[in-house]
Structure formats: structure tokens, C-alpha cells
Image (cartoon, rainbow, N blue to C red; front, side, top):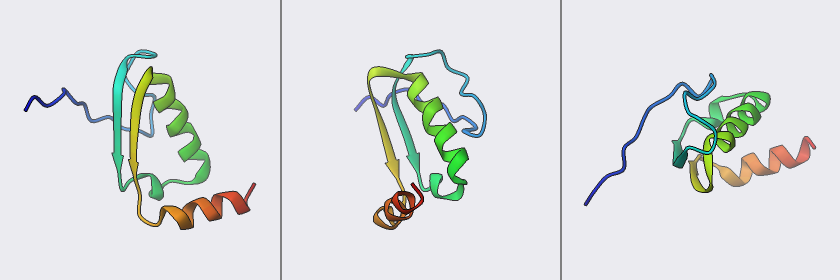
Length: 74
């Protein structure tokens, strides 16, 4: 099996990547630790770096609860 190349980045800062330059983002058990405004900026930055047909995989505990809280604040 061939593993893709990967890079760890500080998601609190601008990703050191060009626009539309990566195929995958994997983020596990970290986003739930940020404030809502930080989370929005992180996701925008991920979208900027992802290729048009790229994938993002987000793993967080209690997704249903987080979505419910987010919707209530709208």
C-alpha cells in the first residue's frame, strides 16, 4: 500500500499551502476545541487550499450535539 505524503500544520494560522493545491485534509478530534469564529476561519482556510475535487475528513465527538448547538445560534 502506498501512503500519500502528509504535512502537519498549525491550523490556527494560514496554511503554508497554495490555493487549490491539496487533495485531502484529515482533522481528527481537534475542531471541537476552538471557538466558533476560529472554526469558521479554519474551515475557510481548508477550503482555500483544497483542490476543487478534494476531500476533507473531519472527526469530532458528539457531532449531532455540535450541529444542534450551531443551528440554535443562527
